[in-house]
Length: 350
Image (cartoon, rainbow, N blue to C red):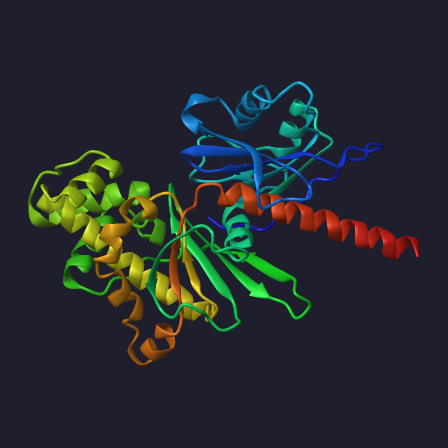
C-alpha cells in the first residue's frame, strides 16, 4: 500500500491563502475529510466521513464536504492522504481504491490553488508519533520506549505500514512502505493448509490478502474449505461479531487465525525496520476487536522470534484509534512541506 510522496505545485501566478485548508484521508471504504487551521494541525475545525461507494469519484466527495461549510469560509488549498502508486500522468493507482485519484484534475475541478498528495500511512505516522491522546490499548512492552524508529501498521481495506525515523534536528522522516504486498509467511500446520488454499488461486500471496478486511473474509472461506465446512458468515464485520459473541466456532477460529498471523507479521516488520521506538497498530479493523485481540495469540506470535524475543519485549506495542489520525497527520505533513518550501525560498533570496 505504501508509495512515495508527490507534490503538485500551485498554479502559476497564484499564491496560497494563509488558512484554512482541507485535509482528506482516502481509504478503500471511507473518505475522512477535515478543515484545518494553519496554527493547529493537530485539531480539526470541522470533520465528516463519507462512504466511497456513494460517490463517483474523490472530487465529488470533496465537493460534498465543501458544501457543508459556511459560505464565509473559503478553502483554496488542501492535502490528500491515500494509498497507491503515483503514475506518470499524475494519477494514483491503488488496488484498494474504488476509483482512480487524479490530484491535479481534482485541484482544477475544485478551483484550488494547491493540492498535495501524501501516502496514507505516512500521514498516520506523522500523527501518532506526536500524541498519546488516541491510545486505546497497550498490548506489549514498556510504557516508555527508547528513542528510535517507530512503526505504524494496520489492516483496513488493505494493509498499510510506515516507519518514522527521528532526526537529530528534532525533525523526523517518515518512509512509506509496501509491507502489505510482501509475501505472507505462516508458522503452523493450520496456517500452511490455509496458505495452500490461497495458492490454488494465485502464485503470490501478499500479507494483505489475509490481513485486511477482505482478507478476513478470505481466511474464513479458506478455513471452511480446510475444515470441510460451509462458510458461516458473509462479511468481515459479521465474522468479527460472531467471533466476539462466541456463538460461531468457525468465525472464532477465523479471527484467532487472523490475530496470530498479524502478530507474526508485525513482529517481522518490527525486526526488519528496527522499530525499537515502538509499534503503533492503526487501521479500521483492530479498534473494533480490541478485546479479542488482547486475548488472542497476537502478542505471543509477535514475540516468537527465537533469540530476538528479548529485544521485542522492549518494544511498546500500542493500539491507537485510527479515526481522524489520517487527516490530522496529512495536515501536519502539509504544513511541514510549506515550511520547507519557505525556507528554501528564503535561502535562495539570500
